[in-house]
Image (tube, rainbow, N blue to C red; front, side, top):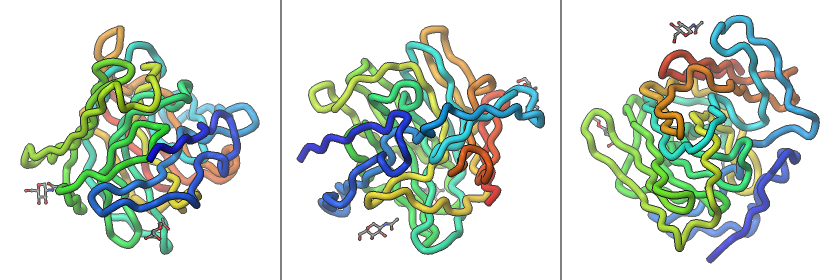
Length: 262
Ligand SMILES: *[C@@H]1O[C@H](CO)[C@@H](O)[C@H](O)[C@H]1NC(C)=O
Ligand SMILES: *[C@@H]1O[C@H](CO)[C@@H](O)[C@H](O)[C@H]1NC(C)=O
Ligand SMILES: *[C@@H]1O[C@H](CO)[C@@H](O)[C@H](O)[C@H]1NC(C)=O
């Protein structure tokens, strides 16, 4: 079954994804409507000087994305390793951490893979090529403390691989997208390391307290070679353009760090 999602380009948060018509296919091939790109605000993006981090002089607020976005060209590979956090929060609260290509200034596609954390202690390891929904990897049961390397590698703007690897054991799962099945073309202009309050069942989840998520070994390969997120744009999650802020993220060297601030 094919769904068409309207991408939320500079639209309101509620417009990001349909949900009521979602079906669960099976436990190993599960459809989850994850956020269709970054939710921006209807007013221009808010940029506020972030004095505490000399390398990232401004922060931008998003309704659903926290982390780092490098804007460039020819990005075809993004990697980063996280340690799976213990999360808490109200019933249904959740967050996901992922690496990806596009979805910020390029609103037509995202190739991404990551892990969702739920306040009930469960996890979901997934891959996605927006505007299709995300699919869960099977046979990859993540738990708190696992070190997981995330990688997306686009062989063209219409094809690529999403891969998660247990950094302790080398065990990996991957999904190959072929050009005949991808629902959109990448722009290859955004490389991302993101913690997200994603969409599920038609609405944005309450952001769980994820403590700190740190992407280490973060890099992106683009047309000017391999870069780190050191000079990336930093995003924090705020539902109201910066009055209430739920995260504090920074990037330095090949590390992107996001802390839940409540
Ligand atoms: C989404 O719906 C499914 C099926 O009803 C449910 O198991 C799951 O907990 C819901 N997710 C959230 C975040 O509420
Ligand atoms: C990763 O490796 C660790 C150490 O062997 C193991 O405890 C954990 O269950 C593994 N997780 C996955 C998802 O393979
Ligand atoms: C800025 O970047 C340099 C070089 O990567 C690093 O040594 C330094 O710690 C960074 N400063 C901050 C405040 O993150």
